[in-house]
Length: 218
Image (cartoon, rainbow, N blue to C red):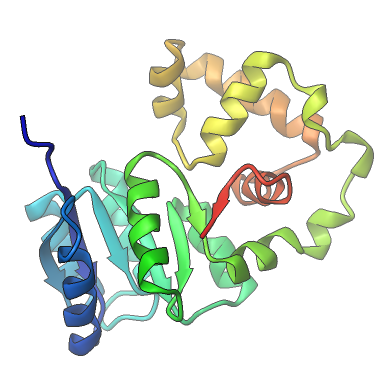
């Protein structure tokens, strides 16, 4: 039985970049570019039509930016969004991660880094370029907050399971399904995790995972 290919949608306002990405991805035996979009609104429309496994998207696009487009996509689809962009500002990266990005790569990434990232997010992982990981992990506000509480050893085995799934970008309902528990139980575990580790947001949780080497950097 032939294994199904990873269906990819490319959203970027530069035609030559889309064409280049298509050639790179379609040279891989397990990937199929099912469509392209030149602006944020069309990216959402095409995603709903094609239901890709992975959307590779830029941050800056006409009509609607990539982060808002991603919010609309992940709200109604199981597609995972991988940003490929020149924007490496901490604020932009944090907003993208908080909104549900499965990965964030700099546009100067190597071809094989992009290919590896697509496979990683397809498998449920989260992936960042080294430069992106560094910016998230070096947040001064995070680094100085409650240092005594930040240790995975303070978590129970179940809380560690929940922590790792959340760090991979999974939603509360997805974690509940994976662990065969109720969303309410996951919410309770998440509250305890955040309290024990001195964290407040999903972005801070992912920063913590990055500092611990628990999330892949390509």
